[in-house]
Image (tube, rainbow, N blue to C red; front, side):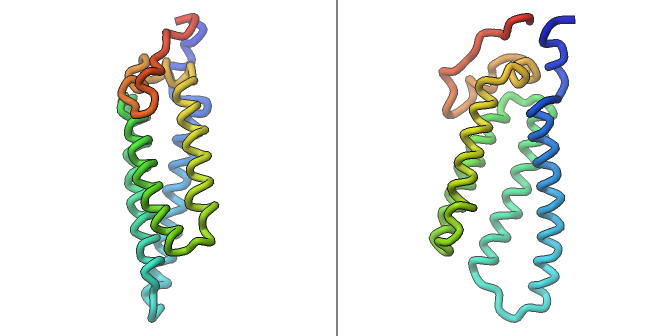
Length: 154
């Protein structure tokens, strides 16, 4: 059994990412159900609230696709993550313009998370082995030139 044999299965931080995003989807559905219950009885719902819910629904749909891309080992998963992060950033900038107090929640935290996860995807031996090579890096917007040599032990 090779040194990286265990990396052929979904595990480690990659598994954590899938589980955390799946949990987030479930939580967001709970949040959406309660929000729709509230709107059924409320008389005046702001445009910010409607835009926020549309953003949440779009985000949930995109996260489902992202999880599926990881599970099926599609080499476009990183490109998809980068594109959806950029789209989400634009939508979050609109939300911040409508509600400036939410700068940290909608801009700063997602940007930090983006840099942490993309660094992990770029440097991780597990991701490289699980995805079957560096095709995911070569298809990336930001890491096309970061293609890697196979990890030791392969």
